[in-house]
Image (cartoon, rainbow, N blue to C red; front, side, top):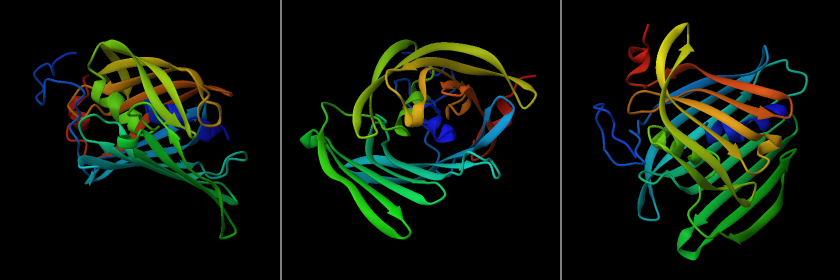
Length: 268
């Protein structure tokens, strides 16, 4: 599905000092804010495909590490003839290094629900995978196995938070990702550059990055992507652009909760 195909790169989206803004001087670093809620609209040309909502739910402990449970809800616009989506992705993300400890997704269309769980067991260099298809209230297990992984990895959601944490840095990185039950990589070019962008008819500064997928993402997202992140310690994703089978897809911040700086950062 076209809208679902944008999900990975949106989630994928989505050194130096904090230039006097406060916080740690080492990277990666993100000012985790429990209750942060960011909602985006997704457009293809002039058609609104739907909305994404990113939420930092709560802190937790996993594998003796502090983690943050994060969620992205994906809802297609009502009335679209080719899309009906109400998907939820959750990731338990390492608070300091941003790799994934546990991942869960529930992907639903008109008649089917697909449940996917990845339990990353780094001490054994493996990930336990459970995939179940649910139709008419009946579940069918599609996979229940383990796969060897050579190193700590990011899932499609934790990668976005890693990009947020690294947005101020400069350098090219080849990042390990576990997606669709496979170990893959993506290239991210952290430019460390401030760019002026338009958002809500205002001008603001943002940190820019771009990159390229080395694999076909969820439902066909591929090749190049770009992202812009706010000039404050939360490094909020503001805008993104990417390629899909249908062409260029645009994502833009629509409204938010518990973004401490918010519109204060908008420069006329």
